[in-house]
Image 1 (cartoon, rainbow, N blue to C red):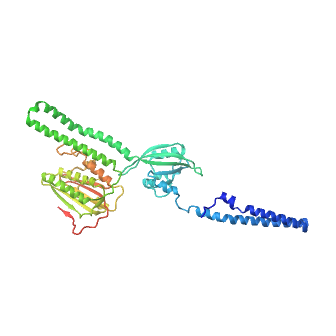
Image 2: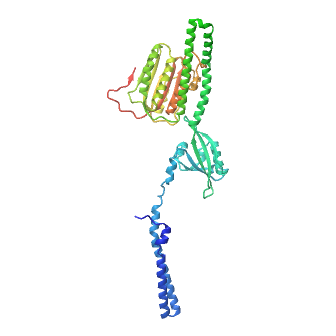
Image 3: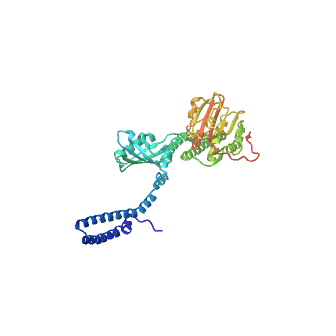
Amino acid sequence: MSAPQTQETRAQEGSPWPIVAAGAAGLLTVLALALVEHFAPLTAVLALAAVAAATAVCVLAAERAGALPYDDHGRAAAPGAGEPTPFRSLVDALPDPILVISGAAPDHVTSRRYLFANLAATQLLRLEGGEGLLVNAIRDPAVLDVADQALFASRDAACVYETTGVQPRTLHVYARPLASAADGRKLALLVFRDETETRQVERTRVDFLANASHELRTPLASLTGFIETLRGHAKDDPAARDRFLAIMQAQAERMSRLIDDLMSLSRIELAEHIAPADRVDLGACAQDVVEASTPIAERQGVQLKVRLPRKGAALVAGERDQIVQVVQNLVDNAIKYSGPGQVVDMVVQADLSPEAAAAPFRPGAARFSLLTPDAPSPTYAALRISDRGPGMEREHLPRLTERFYRVEGQKSGERAGSGLGLAIVKHIVNRHRGGLTVESAIGEGTAFTVYLPQLAAEAPPAGDVAKVS
């Protein structure tokens, strides 16, 4: 089948005008000769006028009949009403959020509107309609200012836009003027470039240098002092030498733990805005940590009591190594602050509502939510680890996840640790889009609850039951 003809081709090849015009001219000539010969001049003129009018009607009818197929073809080729243009799908596929905005007058905030938002912009700004007031979508003064520069000053502008929430994002906003609309409104383009990871790298580098230099100074000073002592009068004293070497080894191990934790925290923060997607059994992770920690607890005279659901009942979307790290840090904390003969309880629960997952555990105890999910999940799996140690005052609870914060008010003491364990827990739970609460009472102990969005449970194997120890 041949391709449809264009209007130019139709005009040159398919138009009926030349044939009809030639036939009409010939007909008029013959009629004119005949009429002039047989009739009076006035009668001949009237007859010729009638013939010319009839010929014109025939010509117009022929032209209209020839144009109809092409009109039908044009209507059939036009896009359907309401269907997206081909470019809409292309713009929606772009990872960067994009807005097309308009403005009528610089003095009227309500005259600034967004006319188009691609899919990324709709998700970032949580837009519902196709267009609306720009100030309802973005309230940041810096972004509105660069929008005004592009709209009314006709120049490129840029700024940094930081979103709020549990998972904040840092975006670089570019504004560029566009040609004015047909009704005179100014138009501009806003492009949001996600620089969260880049800014996080820089922030992590600065924090690492500040915290590492501060925390490493004490053990390094201790090592330097003992080395000088061993080179001096203690080099011939075996008892003093052995004691000093043991202290030096402990300080070196402390620095090693500190460096390991700082590097671990840096890696977690770099990927914190990317939610993990693997299927992880929270109960199985807890069981692995219990088996590894039981010998340590027994050496300190501490008993671990565990209550776990059946296998596969507490599935969460996560990264297994990081979830194990969360459980390990909380168990280590509980054992560390428990005395001989005391008990550390570990409970894993599944199929909890958001309210039940974050519900208080110890009546009368001070309670604080260290982390709350931005978007609640319908169902959660929760891990609770509680000790019966000295407990804490309420004033300390909000600061527990700060780097190097210690309840004793100092960064060294009898209890070994880097001071980063709970900070690591918070960042991992935040990456997994979960929540973290703490409850504590003086003389009664402390309980930490971690709750993570739960996935659909797997079918239980025959004879598989919950574990209690």
